[in-house]
Length: 179
Image (tube, rainbow, N blue to C red; front, top):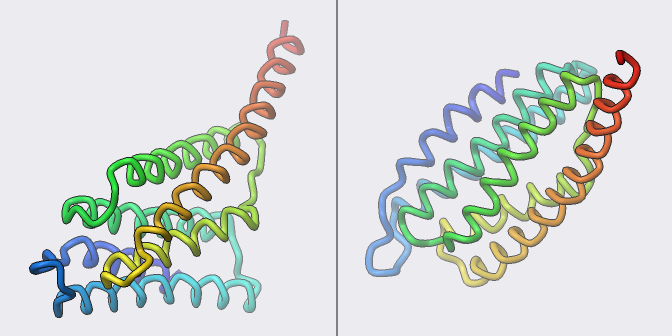
C-alpha cells in the first residue's frame, strides 16, 4: 500500500515534464522517463510484496488499479500536450480506461467480479513500454503505441462485452424475479 501511495505521488510529477527541444531528447526527458520508470517499478514491487505476504485485499486491488490508470492517463495527457502521441490513440486508451473502470464498478455493486485478465496485464505492459519509448524519444515508440492502442481496444471489448451481458442477465433476472 505504501508503494501505491508513493506511485500516485510520482505519477503527478511525471505530468510536469517539460517539452522536447528541437526534437532531441533533453535532460527533462531523461528525468521524466526516470520518474516514470520508478513509478512503474513501485507498482510492480507493491503487487509482488502484497501477493508474497498474502496481504492482497479488495481495497488494495482497487487502489492499485487506480494507480495504474492514473499513471497511464497522466503521461498520455502530458505526451498529448507535447504532440508526441496521436490524438486518436490517446482518446481510445483513455476512453477504455474510464469505461472499464465504470463497468467494473457497476459490476461489483451488482455482485459481479471482473478479475484482471492476462490480456489486461499485457495491455498495461505494452502501454507502459510504449509511453516509456515516447518519453525517451526512442525509435519504435510510434509503432509500440499503435500496438498498445490496438491491444487496449481489443481487451477493452473482450472485457466489456461479457460484463455487459452478465449485467443485463442480472438485471433481467432481478426485474422478473421481483415482478
